[in-house]
Structure formats: C-alpha cells, structure tokens
Length: 371
Image (tube, rainbow, N blue to C red; front, top):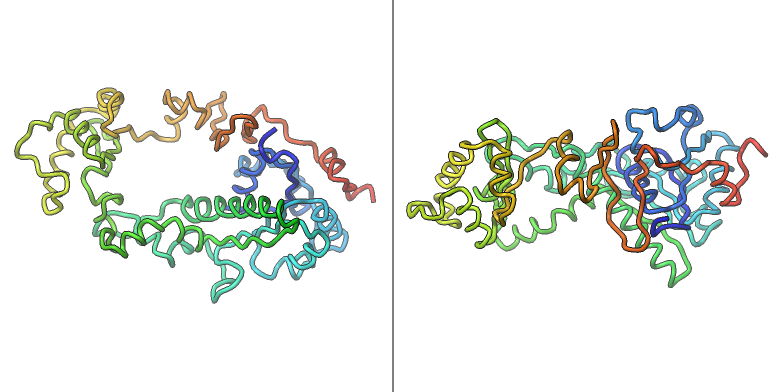
C-alpha cells in the first residue's frame, strides 16, 4: 500500500519536476487525481511520449477556463491533503484556485508550488528551463572539463534533483508539521533554490579554499586523476573514485602500480597530469568488462560505466530492482525502500492504475458528468 496510503493529492498536469514529484508520491502509495485539459485527458497517459511520468494515477479532464471546471477542481481540493501545481506565479490566483481561496476552504491543505524561479524575485514570472535555473546559482558553471565549456547535466540537477525532490521534501515536511498544528501551509519550491542547496558542499569548500571556481580542477569534478573516468581498450569506460588511502592502495594494486617507486604521490597536485597519464595508459590495456571482472571484488572503487540498455542486466542492479527489465519494458524501481509499507512502481506494465470513478467516490466527489 505504501507509506503514504490515505494521503490524497490533487496534481495539476505539467512538465518536468511536477510529474516526477507526483510519480514519486504515487509510488509511495498516495491517492492521486491528475487534472489535465479535457483533450489531453482523452489520450491515455500510457500512450504518450512521457507515459512513465504520468502513469499510475487517474486523469480527470477539466476546463479551468470554465466555471464548471473550476468548481470540480475546488471540490477535489476541498477533499485533498495536498495540491501540487507548477504554473507560473499568479496563474492559479487568476483561476480562483490560489492558496488563499483553497486554504480558506480546506485549512489542513498542503499547497505545493513547483516553479523554476520561485514565487517572488525579479525573474519569478519569466520563462525558463532546467539549464537556465542552474545557470544563476553556480551549479552549471561547475560541470565540465578544465578549459572547456560548461556541460549541462541533462535535466537531472534542476528539474529532478533541485525541483522534484525538494517539493516532495516540502510536502512531506508540511504533512508532518500538520500533525502537530492541525494546519496546512504553502510550499514554495524553486529549482533555482533546490539546485543551489545541492551545491552546499562546493560552496563550503570554496569558503575554506579547497574548492575553486575553475571547473575540472577540484577533487570531485575530474580534477583529481583518482576521481575520473577512463577509456578502456574497447572504447568503453570505467569510473575511478578511490579517494581514501586504503581504496587508493587497492586501486594501485589492482592495476599493477603498487610497487612503482616513480609514481607521483596521490595528493601531489603539481604532478596530477603525469599521474593521470599513467592511469590512462594502464586502463587502456584491457576492455571495460575485463577491468570490471578484475577489480569488481576489490575496494578499488572502479566500476564499468553502463548504458541505459546495459544497466538492468547488471547483477547488483537486477538484484536490487534499481532498474527493471520486464519484457520490452525497462523502468526504474521504486525508491526508497520501506520494511513494512513498500511502495510500488507505477511504471510497471502490470501495475493496475486506480479507477477514476472509484477514486472520486472514495474522496466523496461527484464525477462532473453526474452533476
């Protein structure tokens, strides 16, 4: 049933972090109703290009520009624990569905707002996408090789890490606080804020002088030769992350350099280019999978870099269900894990999506067509 069994969530359909957050809440067992435009709701979520992001929760088509559609949304919100919306600031207020109106009707409501720039500030009403939000807080500047342009990390840092995960954290925190106060509140989650928070260690390191602004020169951004990726004999790659001395020693032993008296010291920054060259030359002598087999049972902190096509078949990934291959379907499993109330992957082909009519009945809301 999941640890959020009994929690009711109204999701206003959107893109990026909103659907990801809703997917996580659904995996954790929340009862969901997804509100979308009538024409979009007529197309099953399972048939769309982003079907996994919308799966597992019933969709109700409502025209929020019509009085009847707004009335339906208000009835659902009055019966809900959580509202999740990702419109630009002011849109929900213009629809008559802003937090003031909703909290007046449902004082226990957690009203979660997921945006790029936040509800206030000079850019609050401007458009943007993941890479724009992580451009202004120092995050994007730090991704990439020394001397090269910044490399956008897909939309994982802004949309999903700094967005979806933080709005879910806000929702869960507000639900816990509500147990004490009996009152709901507004959660203002912004990707520019969340991704900045993800940079906490780097900002602390910069303050104390052990992390610099120049990308690709720090110990965790490929600056250090023992925390980098290397090409192997077959053109594929391994990740090397042996920071601690005992792991570094295991790495040197595993690649045959433990007894090399001329090898530069691990922390001799001036000789890091030389050390990197030595590692690169050795690691190019075997294929990726040969290195994985040779070092896999050691603490050398070396792993093969797998593609999304390969990842589901790795023994550890398969054993954990981190990524599941079910026939032609490949999807990430639910996370995190719970000992008593496990969640369920709403993306699984055998997952039975809750019936919309039954969900509305449980919430005590009449379907629009019955009015």
